[in-house]
Length: 256
Image 1 (tube, rainbow, N blue to C red):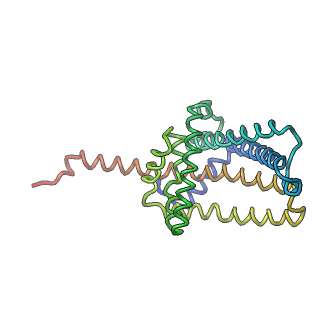
Image 2 (cartoon, rainbow, N blue to C red):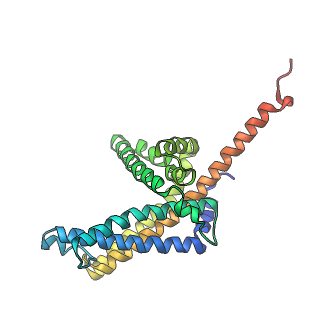
């Protein structure tokens, strides 16, 4: 199954358009909104009143409670991403297996967070040096999180495997991501500007709507990435099988 852009997007969306996908979208939206509220509240309690007034939404609660909740929700969000990746790659639609939530989850989350930081630095350096290297790094390491979540690899091995899997498909993957991400970014930016004009820059409703849409989209894009990952992995395995067949087939050996 080759990486055809149109069918990859379509089948990627189908990986999300089911009971499991809906549960993961809801979980991501709720946790994302909760973290945003807690983070804003912590910042508001730490800043002068003039600056704090620009933050919304906020809640009035003891600072230690707000700080603890912000940290906990921040750490749980990657768990949702791990579960989503495992669920979408496996093609589970009716229920989420318990092992997807529990299997080496602490180790996986740590590798995702550290690997994500390294990934961000590499992309930034590549972009600063010249735009194209930054794009190549972003696309080449696109499946790092998938290898960490699905194969339980450390982030270094996952980066290496992602590089090998994506090699030869960088342009297709870049176009795939552009088709999915650019329209969303434009739409969310327009919506954010519209809400800011309509209800004001410090509107809790505007902030929560933007967060909810962004978190829902983060799950949708994982479905598309899972589909692309599976297609490239199947293609790699097929090429490997053909190579082994050719190497072991006596009829393929050169004759004198």
